[in-house]
Image 1 (tube, rainbow, N blue to C red):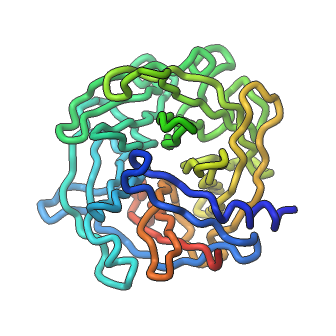
Image 2: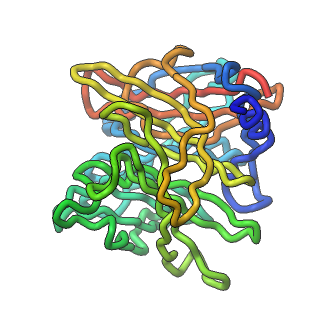
Length: 339
């Protein structure tokens, strides 16, 4: 059954940007044993040529038309760096080049999820259960970094006695999807269960625009979208998501840390949970990424990247160095072994 599900999934596509504008197909592995292949793994610099600090990389977005990679930092000052040359790096060329950064005008900011949509940036900012550090959905102008809108999370996600997001536990990811009629939606996820939820149940929140609403001017409406089931054992969290279109499936990047320095990193394929369903969506397939050579580190960002010469699409992963000299700003590119 698992082999059948993953073979069917091979025809699905992750869509970035607008429908029909630069859409990229992401082919999934034809079977679970085939899995993923590590095409390239490299370290990014810790500082730009002008001495600017680079670190805290928590989310990624790739623009195929310009071959531009955008990396969101979760450092308090809030910034979005952009890099060129990802396609050449995939082919064995030099690492991507730092091409500048955009200051996001919101202080403090703990950006963990990123979506680029029609010249604007949607960012999921992680909270700390305090009035001065709430979890929020933020909208910025992609050219200037000016804050255009701040949207509160629903009541269930707000801090309260034994309720809401735990401190430093999300929202951790933000993904872009499209409905059958072409209207976009955003999918937000916590990193770990809300305090009132069962263990291993990670909630999803769908931010939906109604027919006729302009995503460039109006805030979407938050709607429950069920939950995903984390792996067995304490300490697992969901660090990023990709919406797989069409077909209503998700790719989730899963992370587990055990002190002092033991990491586990997995990639899982989920069905899109059904709103109102009490049972969380269990993975249809799951892959151990350390087993294929991924460095054990704090991998947080996931994006669809360039396409190989043989037509296989690539997943881009980025790691957060936590400003720790024993960690690194890492970039990895994976592709399915077969289609």
